[in-house]
Length: 105
Length: 138
Image (cartoon, rainbow over all chains, first blue to last red; front, top):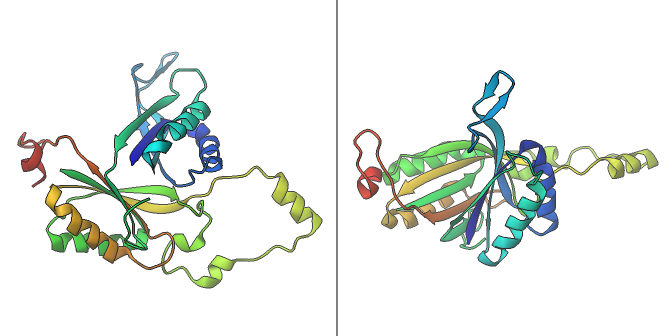
């Protein structure tokens, strides 16, 4: 299993989530976060924004679905401008459903 | 070292914390998150285990033409359920016991009890002393 953490624009979240739902990945967790990237924030005239609001989407998928899910997120999150976000993928060894106590997604 | 990520009901947080205390692993990080599962966030019962049944059924709108039009013209919105996300980093041998403790503290038998993920952690540093890896989480 793989955990996908996607840092995306907050205004793109609904579009991404509905696209993932349509492709059979309804389960995810979202949280609001603040961050900055290579550009060290955003300069608008004399005002410098060091930390920009982003939405962190976290989901765990089976190994074979990883590329499909990442493809959907990157397609829907893309605007072509700086600040579209990053996607990180990390391994997950085990998943448990609390209701049943069983292992597996 | 392993990282245990548990997504649980809001009202089960105190029970989970005391279950972890008794196991001897009281350190954890808590985040307020919004989540959705296989039910796509539409499950009212997911929210809190003590939610009354009548609240979940709600008021049904009679299907008049205007209600039908309203339901089919509004843009679809993704729904979420408020949850608590716990992050716990522990030595390898403690993982099994902690997973069991979290499951037994959170099990209500209804959908929305949550998920637990176990993933490997490459390294750890205790900031105060500079201790690394095993010593840092002990």
